[in-house]
Every structure is written in C-alpha cells, then in structure tokens.
Length: 420
Image (cartoon, rainbow, N blue to C red; front, side):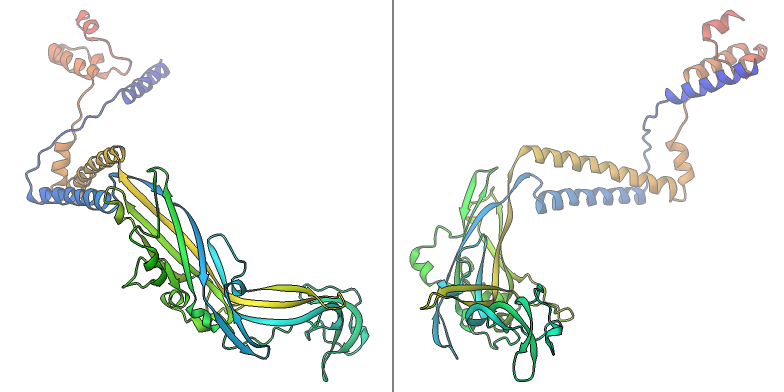
C-alpha cells in the first residue's frame, strides 16, 4: 500500500514539473543607481547597433566579392658591359616567360655558362665528388646534386684538386660566385603597365583600373606616385620595391618576390566614379637575417643551337630576378531591405541583454538584493492546491485530517464536498 502511495506521489511531482509555467513579473524599482545602469547598458547597445553594425559594417547592405583578370606589360632597356662585351637587353630578353597568370618575372642577375656540349668532364668539387683515385668514384652513380653520371674515373679539376669524371653538359656550371652588383641593375627604372578588369556579378557591375578620365596622352607619360598620380596604372619597379621598404639594388642580386596589391572597396549606393582601386606593395618572400637559408629567387634555362659540324651546343643561364605577383581583392555593397531588417531585429533583441544584466545587479549585487528578490519572484499555488485551501476554509476545525495529509492523487472539489 505504501509503495502505491509513493508511486502516486512521484507521479504527482512529475506532473507538476511538466505542467508548470513561469511568467515574467514586472517590478518597478525607483532607484537612480539602477536606472542609470540600465540606461548606460541601453546606450551602449544602441551605439553598437548604430555605430558598428550600420555605419562601420554597413549592415543595411548586401555584399559581393570581386572577380578580376590581370594583364601586364613591362618596358625598359638595360646595358651590360663585362667579359662577354657590351650587350643591350630589352623586354624579350629579361621577361621570362613572356606571359604568366597574374604575375611577371624580371631577370636582374645571372650566371652564364656558354658553349656547353655533352661529353666527359670533371665534376665540381664537393664532399661526394672530390677524389684521389678511381676507387673513390663509382661508375654509373647518379646524385641529385651532381651535374651528370659518374664514369668511375678520377680526373684533374684544376692544378690542385681532383674530382670524379661525369658524363654531362660540359663544362659544368660553376655558380659559386654571384655577380655584384647585379648585371641588370638598370631594371630599377623599368616600368610595368598593370591592366585590371573587375566584376561584381551580383550587382552586374564592371570596371577597370584605367579610369574613364585617363586618355592615351596621359597614359604615355604618367608614372604612379602616391601623392601626385595615385590613379596611374604604370609603375616604376624601383618605386614598387621602395614602397615595400626594400632596396632594389640589394634585392636584384639574389632576387625575391614582390606583391602588388589592388584593393577595390566599392559602395554602390554612392556615385559610380567613387569606386576606384587602391594600390599597396609588400615583399612576399622570407627575409629573415636569422634564417637566411636559400634566399632570393632563381631558376635555370638554356638556349640551344648547333655548331658548324652539327654538334648540339647550349648556353646555360642561371637567372636571378624579382617576381611580381599581382593580387586583387575587395568587395562591393549595395542597399537591400533583407539584411537591413535582420540587423534591426537583432539590434532590438539585444536590448533584452540590458534587462538581464540589470536583473543580475539588482538581485545579486545590491545591498537590498534579498528584498528585491522577494518582490521579483512569487510562487502561485496550483489548481489542486487552491481547491484544498478552499476546502480548508469551508471545513474549519471539523475538516477530515486526510484532506491535509493526503499524498495520493487529490480528489476534486465536488468529490470532497459530497463527503461532508
């Protein structure tokens, strides 16, 4: 019997838990301190919604990211005068390859190994190639760092050093000494025309960095300058490197990688003419004096031809230079009612945070917190408890004791009154 009473009691508690309802209770507190705190919270939320969301972040707009294409054209002449004689270098000589996607390479220094032909010759001295006899050389050995395949013979490299003989393009390249200053030091004065076309597909908006007011006459004589010609799309290579905080002549010796950044930030609610590109420049490759392993930028290429007797000969060039990467980024915004209403609704919802914070201060931090807590929360009896209280008032002292002590499911008001 007791188990049945316990089960009924547990069932009653569970039912009360499932079918309870909490409703907010408004307590009007006349306190300057609490009122000031509440207004400060509200003003902070209002400043955030208006200042940050709508003014700074333009929360009333929808946005689209830029799609772009880039083409470049380099111009300039350089003169070298060394053991090979005087030579003129034009754009067909120092731009390798002629076209790249969103980048271009300008050769500024080089190591030339002329008149190579396939045959047998001494390898460059090194830990794995220096020898004293044929026993130090392995026939057929191929090393990724060598210039060819060893023949198994130890031959003289010069009057004092012997190295293993290799089957390779001979004579092998000697890249231990790099020309200083750079051979094409005049590349500092070369210029590059950067043509950039952009599109924002969501708004069907297109534009290019050669602005409408730029004509052919202006384009032939202008050079980009941060103050005097900020909209000119022709850049002097030395100015690009200088604006990145680097020295062109130092960089030209071993090469490097530079970034030309074009930023399009367009507010399409304003005039079309106000959407213009902004140019910035920075060095992209690592220049850490504490970690200067494999610095610069270089690669090899060769030019092939045949001698009078039909032997294939090549000139090997190890080219050092600066690669310029053109990077375009940006976004455009235009008014749209949907993000506007979403941000307004979110801002209004944030005002509820002020109420929560004030409740925390009032109920847990102020001196009168216990008094305010008593006024804030009030427990209302359930319907069954209200019926029991009414029965108690009706019965007075003659009420049955089991009505007060009952733990089984309560009787209804009609059932109790019928038993009196």
